[in-house]
Length: 424
Ligand code: GDP
Ligand code: IMO
Ligand code: MG
Image (cartoon, rainbow, N blue to C red; front, top):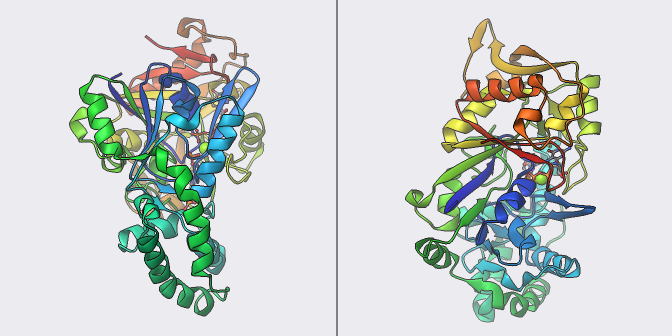
C-alpha cells in the first residue's frame, strides 16, 4: 500500500473512518486533504467509540503520522479541542502535522454559514453550519487567511481587519445580524497560534519525502463523491473536492504516486441534508435502515435519509475517481430484509437512464428501476471469511462488482474493527 486514497463513493458517512482505521495499521502517514470539521468519522475498537472530525483516523496507531494537508479548512479551536480529546483517550496528538497553507475557518465564516442557510429558507442546503462554504469562498476569492498567517501577528491583524471591512457590511445589511469585532477575533486566534506552531509544516514536502522513502501513505477522504462541488449533486454539495483529484490537489502530490483508490460504499445509501436522492425510501424499510443502521449524523445528530443502493451513482463514483477497489460497509444491516433492491436504471419523462444523469433536474423527477435480489435473513456479524457468508450475500456482492466493474476487496459486517471480511 505505498499510496492509497480512501474516499466516499456516495453522499458521505459510508464508513470511511473505520476503513481508514483498518488500513492505518500498515500506514506510516494518514492524510486529510479536503473539508474540515463538517466530517465525522467514527471508529469502534472493542467497547470504545471514537468520533473524529479533523484529526486523521490514523491517530489510533502510535507509529502512524496524521497529516492535515493544505486543501483543508481548519477551525483552530475545534482542532485544539480534538487534540485534547484524543490525548484524554490515551492517544498522542504530538505527531500531528498541519499544513501552513491550510485555510482558517474564522468566526465570521460560521456566522455567514448559518445566516446564508437561514436566508435560503426552503432552498437551504442543510449544511453543517461549521463555516465550510464561506471559508472556501474566501479562499477562492483570494481573501482567505491561512494557518501561516497566525505566526505573523501584524499581517494576521491586517488580514482580519480587511476581511471584516467587507463582512461587517454584509452581516448587518444583507443578513440582518450584528457585525463582529476584529480585536476579539485577533486575540482569540493569536491565542491558538503558539499551541499550533509545533505541528505546522510544509506537508507537501513531508509527503514527497515520505513517498520517496517508500513509506506507506493513506489519503483519507471526507464527505463523498456525490457531495463534490464539481462532480456531486450541485448545489446540494459541500464546497470542496472529496474525489480522487481532490486528494492530489489538496495534499500537493502528483497523480502518478497513487497506487490504489478505494471507494467506500454502504451496502445501501444515505444522505444528510437536502438535495435529490432517487432511491430514498419514505416507508418502513427506510425507517428500519435508519434505526438498525444507527443513521444519525456524527456531527449534527441529524437523521440521515436512507434508501436502496444506487448502482448508477456507484458506477459514476467508480468513473470519476478511477476506483481500483470497493469497500462495502454495513452489509449486516441488510440482514433484516427478505428482498433487497438495487437501482440499476432511472426512468424520467419516458426515457431510461443507464448512467448517472449529468442533468440535475432528471435526478429530481426520475423513478429508479430496481433489480430485486433475495435477502439472506441471517446474522452475519460474526462472519470473517467470504466463503462463510450466505450465498445470497455473496450474490449481492458479486452483482455489485459486475455492474460497477470494480472488484469488492472488503465487506464489513459490523462497526467494530474486527468485523470485516477480506476478499482475496
Ligand atoms: P464516515 O463519515 O464515512 O467515516 O462514516 P460515519 O462514521 O459518519 O458513519 C458510519 C457509521 O457506521 C459509524 O457509526 C460506524 O461505526 C458505522 N459502521 C461502519 N461500518 C459498519 C458496519 O459494517 N456495520 C455497522 N452496523 N455499522 C458500521
Ligand atoms: P463525512 O466525512 C455526510 C453535507 C451536509 C450538507 C452538505 C454541505 O462524515 O462523510 P457543508 O457543511 O459541508 O457545507 O454541508 O454536505 N455533509 C456531509 N454529509 N457526511 C459528511 O462528512 C458531510 N459533510 C458535509 O449535510 O448537505
Ligand atoms: Mg461521517
